[in-house]
Length: 250
Image (cartoon, rainbow, N blue to C red):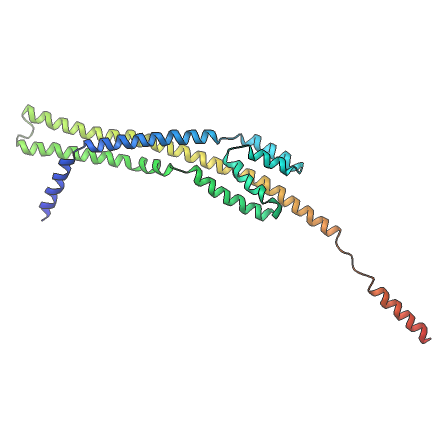
């Protein structure tokens, strides 16, 4: 039973060959290159000079120009600006509301930045194994030819066929590595860009929260200073009435 399973598996591998694996690797490489180009263009279009944006945003907030701050971030296509815009929309409801809005916007922007990167990560991790599968198939073919000839590769014809099968199988491994290495490099690069974007967003978020908390504290101080004074009118009539009573009683 076990021998039958082995023979059937061997027959399937021999029928399959390493050529379909190579075509699969070429197709995957084309898809990965397309994703690299698309993601590279996307990150280029949403890039922003964060230092300049933070300075301009701080100036508008210090001048209490909320409309100018909204217009500033609305004119930018960056993920950082979209996160700040979400906080500015909820700024009138207090710093807690603005913080929650920016946290939600950060999660949405992260999904936008990480789009299609899972394919690159998966391909980078598994492309060598796919190439190794092609290599194994090629080696199985080579040994099958040796077994079929029964010459152990001593004759020139069978030996040439065996060496050709082994070289073909090694090409599959090479293609797998060629596909995997750029995919892993691109995946790591884009992940680094995402981490930088999130860090920039945190910096801008703290600018918004600092303004919101400062405004809230200032409002609390004003309410404390101009709070209602203790009412004395209710006690004055009481004392006045007591005086009148004592006068009349005398």
